Amino acid sequence: MSGDTFRRDIGWIDFMRRSAEIAEQHEYIVVCDIADCYSRISHHKIENALQLIGADPKVRKSIMGYLGNLTQTRSSGLPIGGPASRILAELALVNSDIYMRSSQINFTRYADDYHIFCTSKHEAYASLLNVSKILSNDSLSLQKSKTRILTRAEFIAVNKNVLVDAGASVTPVQRLMSLTLRYDPYSSNAEQDYEALKSELNSIDIVALLNEQLAQTRVHVATTKKIISALRHVSESAQFGAAISMLDNMDVLYPIASNVFIAIASFFKNLNSQSRSQICDRIRDLYSDKHEVLQSAANLAFANRIISMEKSALNQEHLHRCYDNSTDSIVRRDVIITFANWQNFAWISMEKQKFQTLSLWERRALILASYYLNDEGKHWRGFAKDWFNPFESIVRDWRAEKQPDFKLPL
Image (cartoon, rainbow, N blue to C red; front, side, top):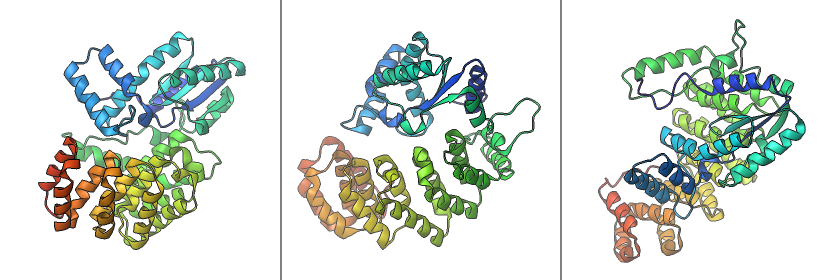
């Protein structure tokens, strides 16, 4: 036993190889994936699946309680990232897989990516419609911007850069796609594993691969995701240049915008002040220009978490606008927490007057933020304590045990 949650010898590249093999026997291939998969996974489907596999009732109750607390009034959504979420997502999608197989739909799936194999264009459209209906029953849908019907030749041509024939020379893209970028920092060989990964990546020009993708009218999504993930391991100057290039090309990168913002956030603090300022300028411009990428609440939240790492008057004004213009609880909660960490006392003092009208996420954030108001916050908590529900009282008590200068995590 290796101790790994998932098998290391099976990955995305194996999914692509298997798809290429099946594609050789079919005329058309539908390429598609689930839109906002993790945020739309139904809690009811997870609960049914846990019951079906015989999960311990206490474990099932604990998982469902955590998910319910996480998403509040919504009965859907998983935290993005981490093996636990992936396991639950796979569990929730199993019934759809089984139904597709029994419906004679020939497909492969890796995470939320589907390849559907058909003998005619008519069958391709019919299969696409059937898959949409099956996923709709689970409150899921396909992402329009990434759904394509390709001929066999087109499918092979699109993916030739990530697949290599036996005996052929391996391209930089193929080398990158064969690497596993995740490593376990708690393993006994963590340091050696990390150094080995860095050595492999240093031999590949990651930024050049990114620029190749950005030069295309339509990026190869899986390849570009892998390139973006690898950016956290390159030099500071390369990271800054890559961040600016990505933010200047969000029209092309729109389908994977969240990956872009998460990647930039992972290395943002390593950059110098001028570089951080320029990245924030680009993000604020995207918002001011009403770019479609930041019309998504999830994307806006990810982008604002970058902004939250760089306190400035311009960034404060930006976050204030986002708070006033957004109805999303997570976007607004993050602004409250950021302003608490920035000691924006005047704003917090004004906002606490609206406490009873706020969402549960915002209320908890405001309780935490009130500790930065010193005596004013103490008097307010005493006055408002009867408004607090049991969990909000736990949040209050948790913060009370921390040091006065404790930084709230996002």
